[in-house]
Length: 229
Image (cartoon, rainbow, N blue to C red):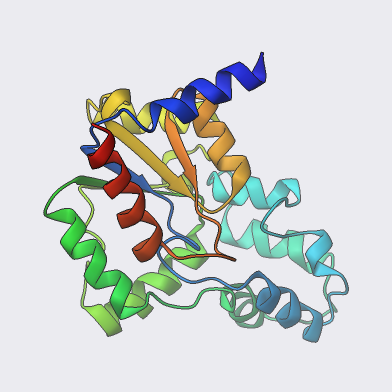
């Protein structure tokens, strides 16, 4: 049953006229390093931080933080249970933000060109601490509100109170923007989020960052769509 379901979605990707593209942020657009954050917390005294947080899974309080259901202070307090006594808020934030890198210039240029042909939306599982950090970082490099100049609308999990892979967040993006499922594709580098989008009825593509990057993967896929239509 599942095979038939996934096969039908897979086949549909070869017979769609794409007008709308929903993109994940971390990994797909902005480079992130999960090993770096684990190493940063290890240096702060948290052993085996990767057991708490990784690309594939994370402790429940990270989910709560991404849904905005706990505050920055509550998040830090939960982390302190795994850290040496006396660690400061700034030290926690610095370690937590160490995973966030930047957006390569070539990718930013690609997104600006993509915007000319498609309606673009950003859908990210993120939190308030990371958002303040990458907003300031990207503003210095690319100018203020650089993402708002590319994406028609930006959905950040902690602001909307829901997160991937739950169907409700995909449904929200689709309904609020009157998007057609037959004309919309979602791209994420986390397979669990791709599977969530599949279950929500979307055509979803897994971007394997061990093999390619968005600015190479997406043009190739879109060219295949044009040849199939």
